[in-house]
Image (tube, rainbow, N blue to C red; front, side, top):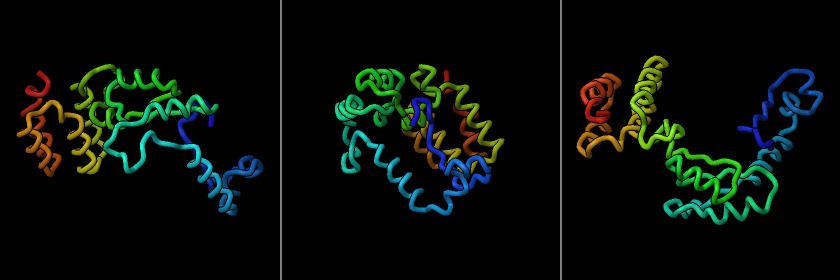
Amino acid sequence: FTRYSDGVDLNCGCPQRWAIQEGYGACLINKPELVSDIIHQTRNAIFHGRTKEQRSEPVNYEAISLIKSSINIPVIANGDIKTLNEAEHIKKLTNVDGVMCARGLLANPSLFSGTEFTTLDCVKDWIKIAIETGTPFTCFHNHLIYMIEKLQSRADRRYFNALSSVSGVVSFWNKNIVLMFP
């Protein structure tokens, strides 16, 4: 791993001669044990701040900090990070190289701009992109549920969550945008 790596791509099908000569790409297709070892070693380098049994408990940032201070590879903190302030606080607290905040970004895709809630422009952009690209309804709707949840009354949330068509969502949006974004 490098400090600036976003992920690992094994690309076991690359046919380029130089890749095969270096021992990766398509030649890995004939080395399933090596591919398995690569995956297992990657898995051995990953940890989480809580176990699956602790899913409703807070992340153990002390453990993350201890691991970070004990090894010389990049460490990313993850879990229970829902705001930009929390991300910055956890990064400082644990001295990690970065943070992930999936739930925070689901609820507020504009989180890194420092806003407390999803911005109107962000919601409009999602609706436009999802419709233009033919995003499956469940994905389109579920992302909106996360984005506008804190901006709705309980009754509106129940109604919105039960919608079952793009036209229903768009109609609801057009009628309620003023209430959610005064």
